[in-house]
Length: 244
Length: 244
DNA sequence: CCAATAGTGTCTGTTAGACAATATACA
DNA sequence: TGTATATTGTCTAACAGACACTATTGG
Image (cartoon, rainbow over all chains, first blue to last red):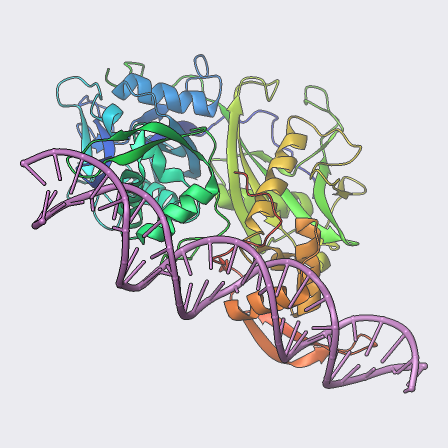
């Protein structure tokens, strides 16, 4: 059967929003950035915590990614160095205002930038995540709790075979610091030697001349050659969950 | 800055469509399924070849995936055993009718089903793909040429470390047949022994009692334990492009 | 027996894990 | 020198590639 014979422009269109699960490692634990929903009549989930995001503005946004960056900028004053699409979810039930699609993104923010988040008195916060990758103790608006879990799962799985987690670190960083964020993201300890060999063989780091004095033996400092370029290892770390 | 103070429902909404890059291996080469666009006044790209897809119908579609499946069913009579989201692309320029988002999917269809595609006289076809994963010699409507390339690239990259390409095969199949589709997708030859060891160690296949008589030595038949369950190998095949 | 395809044996290279051994800072 | 942290050495195991070899069918 050929393309259906509906009018060539649909009279009823889905709502299109972009939501960004913005992640950072603070105090050694993964956190997600939340914003408070407006407390006005007619608004769904008034005053509830939610992911930064909102409707695509066809007059303002040049692309989906531009829209996501705008949300982060406007709602939290953040310019995320890493941003990727995770999935699209649509349906009649996810928003009481009607059939809606959300374009879910994940953003990784280095700790130093994360602490500079800007928000009107108490309407922006970092919430620690539980071991299941879901917000602890707080019910989020819409299906945002599930979305956070999905974004975290994606980042975690990808961290098994890429250098993604470095994006949680301000530059420059040391290899022990780098190993530490990997261990936090993957929720398991990694062998020191194996990690160093793997990373250095990957040749995605630029070795700096200086070192970080921490009181004990200083660690050599490194920097990513290209923060936008994801390094893909040909072999996953072991012990992880290989499930799709 | 808090959430912008726009009206709580946008008056102008993007067009939301779902497009499906439907792939099959025919005559030893990857093909993509195309449908002909209506040849009516007001329609963009009248009579041009395009991916099956169209606007989300908020009255009919329960979810994004349901919408994608409906497109395939209505436009080509296909029920794809494998369907996954690839990406969302949005912008003002992709569709002359206005700011539009497409939710790009990839579907893999076994050869036997692919040949049963249903379409009104000549408005559905399988087009062979060039080595770059793009349609050869045919200009597609909208940005669909680029979308096909993106979907193929995704499938190819994933085939380096999963059992994805088996979805191109009707069941049951032999290991040589399986190796063959991998080689076609990855565009390189794979060592027989390495491939067999890898696959059998993965334990995702069910060994049947029968074998396929091909004139020479018959090959043992296998079946996937679970076609929906993607098997993820911990190590990629070598020689591939590890780029993200 | 021959041709052709299916399937195995064996060696090598790479790299992750385990864990012991050094190295370098400061007090 | 002692202690804590960084960095390296060495051995093992798993597994992909190379490639020769054996097995099973029809003619």
